[in-house]
Length: 128
Image 1 (cartoon, helix red, strand yellow):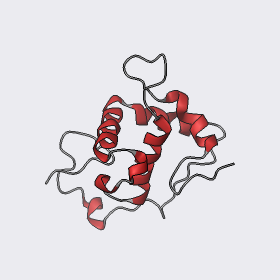
Image 2 (image 1 turned 45 degrees about the horizontal axis):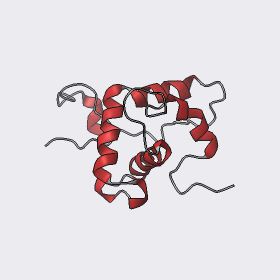
Image 3 (image 1 turned 60 degrees about the vertical axis):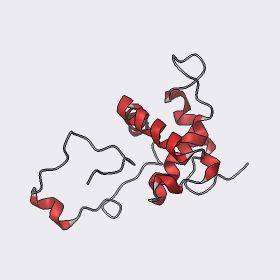
Image 4 (image 1 turned 30 degrees about the horizontal axis):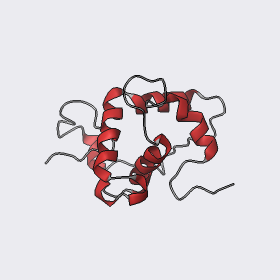
């Protein structure tokens, strides 16, 4: 059994989500070249905290990965995956606690007006 690279999905994790993703044979539109490689690229950026342009070449061109990531976010693909994983009764691989989620002390004041235009997409650069 091949151990996945750092930040990548295991075979079991991939098995749980691959059917939820667009781009499969039989889906309308284009067929994804390699959904696993793409998802692992997205996870690499999000888990490492690196910029999209620092994405290793093994995941493809960073602009293409970012564009596809953004399209999936706007289409609700990621939300669907997260909802499926959260509802899974065998969910022993999703864990959050206060040591992982922190807010800046000023976030509690309610000042600043918040996000313009609704929900901020993960990995999408903020506008200045």
